Length: 503
Image 1 (cartoon, helix red, strand yellow):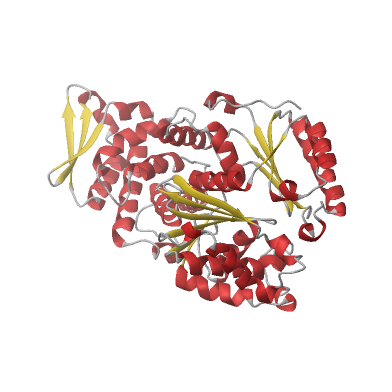
Image 2 (cartoon, rainbow, N blue to C red):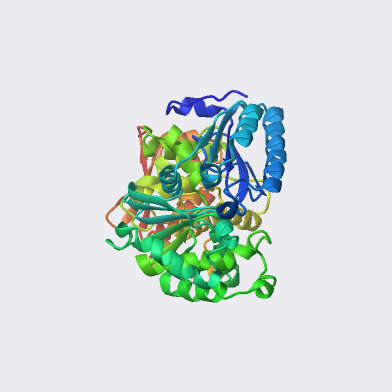
């Protein structure tokens, strides 16, 4: 299998892209349809192989783990061959950095895939994890902590720039099997290692971004136990004081208590107390205000460094918009016409910015022949779970509400539990956007081409619809009704102006 090396060009990303991550505890393969358009993989499979089991004691790869790992990798190779995917990157972390007998394993893997394994140094791993978190958030400002099976990577990121990074020999698999460091001494051991990193305590961290499967499991457990309505762990944020109490409780769990834990993979539960002890010590040293979960990390960051180094953020965003629009069946990019039409009345709206407005125009486009209320409910759920990373839970709810009200009257509401996450201004703005999209759809029942000839704008205490005289017949009773509804939501008077010229 031959690797296609990218040169920071979006054109190369048209081919499907795969990445294999060989870790101390697990091996994972992700496949992307087009990494330049979406950083959410359509294939994501993990196998717990425990290559690094007893590594501190033996200094060698675990024998049964190696045998299992090779079987898993052969399966991954078959999947890539059947799928005719040749654009592949393989990365490896602590276990292949530290074991003394890796050469035969590396040779066999490289022969199998005809691809070199990129064995990352500790600092490279920290850098990639931080870059991966940057993919999933609008602006990263704080400490990125990536906990794996063999190591813990830490990186300070200030306004999206990585300023400090380190790798520590603290991994959940390593600690579970460490012959010297027992659970009762673990906090003291971790505290000592963290204190040696002087930069950790020099500045305050507003945010702590957590990466890694065990911490994802911890956040999932908290999310479910607290009945959080948005069942997405990415960008799930917990206040320091709240998480401290939760972490303290989980860190005290013994084996019998861990068996009662629901919703979490049994391969993760043994590591939960260790991950909580580690997290507690990091929180004590850095004292962050918010602790946030990130599902994007090492793998996404490694690819991001290859593909997006010289690409503008705006280009990445609009490429993602086009991809979502295409998935929604908007083959003519009609979302751009809707956006251009309604944007003037939302200019300067701090509660529903242009990014969200673009996304609302894309995500509201769905018509599967269902009744209006059924469509509203369906679109709400589809939107709140949309596979886009750079959305906070609040933004997801705002978008989902605007798309909901695009399909049904604003006199209806979704479940109240969602509304409690927004303030009144954010709810009003979502209603206004929904009403604008609903009105726009009534104007385009024949063709969206008419939106290019109409103009919607605000002046004083009124909202104006300016249309060419030759299109007067389009202003039906339904259009008039929905225009009045939009004006009402904007707290403005509706005015229709006919002109002899188009825009």
